[in-house]
Length: 465
Ligand code: PEP
Ligand code: MN
Image (cartoon, rainbow, N blue to C red; front, side, top):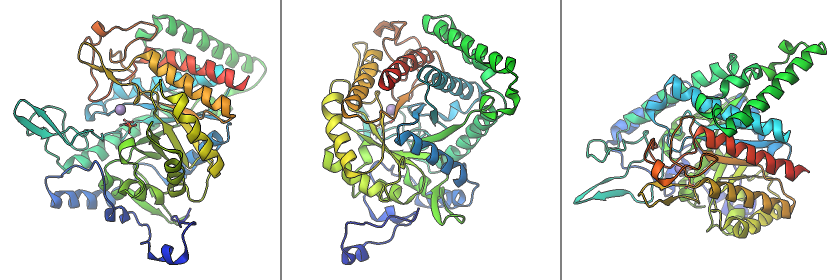
């Protein structure tokens, strides 16, 4: 794909636009960028990363594009899931394994129960930057820069912790690399083998109703594998049964990092952001004339943008024109995050306007970010029922319009945390304090995640039936 050429402009207007380059975003207003404490240190990190090995290569990214084209055309489903804010400390084998296994569990539930291929895209190996509603946080008389994710600073409310140190960008790259290395090894080296579906069921999940439901699904998969072998099929010859592909994604927020990781692919002449297979634009940085839309418009990776309840049909179509000028099916994922009580009202007009515009986008639902509230205990939380209700609303709108509900985008962890209310275990506000570990937003725990997968699988089955 060549850098975008604005097709609607007269030649004179088009000629006056500076050409896209990995750094052309610098001429636009860039929201949510930290005030780095040293420009010289920032430049040094940018130079270092620009010469560093890519984390992913264009060939893999093109495979994701091909799979997402299938999603856009209603033949596959997208599962985008992972942490709200990954911690540098979570680049350890236990945390990586637990996050991978819950994503594998959810994907197998969706594939088995709904019978559609599932494209697995982690919010992982790079999800280190957070947009914030205020640039500063004030407690008593002290005002400090907000915590913006581990790529920028630390969450502790202390002057030293909140310094924006550019060297953290380099650390983010290193942690993403080690995380991705283990993910690649595990998905290709036997861990994701379908013969191991039982082993993905963590003890604290297995002991519950949803865990038992998963166990019986795993039994069925075992039986299917034995059946194939009994029929004389040598399953060793079928790599799809022994390996999985987990693609990586994060919010492409810190543009210095994203630019430094962007490389010209000599094979195609296109620019690829090699920090992840896919990146998305957050709800707070999707303004049409802003730096993020400019940067994202020129990279060949499949990309996403969040779409919240204030988005108008006209605005969303303009975003499609800017981000998907060549109308490539699946290039752009619109991640709707409306809130459970607004989704049925607000989503329909957007889906209709985009369909009319001819852009073959993927519509995904983020049922988390429009449903956050502060519980009486004072903790930021989300209720499982609201998460499920937003997904139901999303499916309902697509059923009404005859369009494909392409995927879900959720914040989760493989750990046994107590951050979101409800679910089959009926987690209560009093229990939130037990293991409330998130650095930013409340995440579904592994039980709630598998539970949600079963419910989405039912909706997908209804959609097809
Ligand atoms: C996020 O996905 O972590 C996020 C900040 O979402 P949004 O941009 O939709 O608020
Ligand atoms: Mn979040």
